[in-house]
Image 1 (cartoon, rainbow, N blue to C red):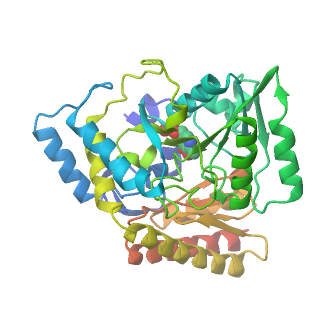
Image 2: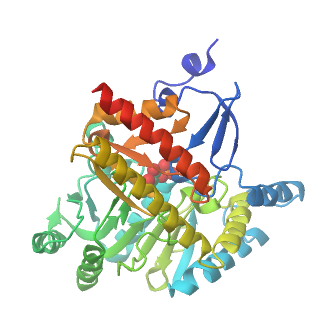
Length: 414
Ligand SMILES: Cc1ncc(COP(=O)(O)O)c(C=O)c1O
């Protein structure tokens, strides 16, 4: 019996792109049960920024499991949660002068987004949401509804109080005028309560917004009492170099959604950072059985303490990001005939080849060369590179070489 084909739902997806049966993993290498090794430039869709089975964090996890400590704790007080809260404060919030409280939620990015939207509604009394084309916020009813341009919007009924603005690479006066106009609109009888943005879009195709536009969002929202929600589920926790992808932009969000790599080890965990003055929840008003994953608290605290005590990782990610973008520029020049576009921020990078079939051929060609990459963006025409941010430079260069061969062969075939 082929368990996967006979027993799993038709909805399965990644296993169709990468039909290996994986058995072990370490750092940036995945090993299949037949012994074949793959370089992983996908990193659990951004949940494994610190690599598979990061040895430091595995040690913490094993120690945690052996010691009889709590695994599940809802939102009761535990030793691990205290250490995690203190690590977030000392390594992340305080150095960035962010006066925010931490709301742990059920363990998915979509849950964090849902909580952020509910809080914005609670604070402002307004339900309508402004988002952006190409954004992705998750698969719950409301998160899918505000994930503009995603297929789910066409497939399921969706909440109506939502409007998507265009992505802005370089801000123009027109963009600013449209932003101001939109924020003043009433949608389906509802005023705008929040703007939600991925400062660097992940599923949208590795697209960073113009920092000047992010600043304008903050200014215009402040004028109107609208909350700014930064969805950092994919781009946060160091993926773009800085801990948050909006750092230095002036976005200064009211709520920050974090998940994916926040546990460091790739175990489920999600939370929102909420501006202290907007923490309007009543006790128990937003709940979730699995919002107290102590294994995740333990590994997250260790990750924050180890990697965010200084600027080494941030600098390293920026340097590696430059290596990737330079290499992608060369591929674009060599094979793109002026049509390809290189995008990215830190190690959230993409090569937009403007052609669905070509992108899919490149990703398949990469897999044939034991390199794992996925496609995303408008028309699935962007080959996205999301290697672990702790990847060795040799492995990075090796993977880029394999990608180059895949691009060369796919463009030749067309
Ligand atoms: C930016 C962003 N927000 C939210 C989500 C949803 O996270 P989850 O799949 O954990 O619900 C994702 C997932 O890819 C994401 O990239």
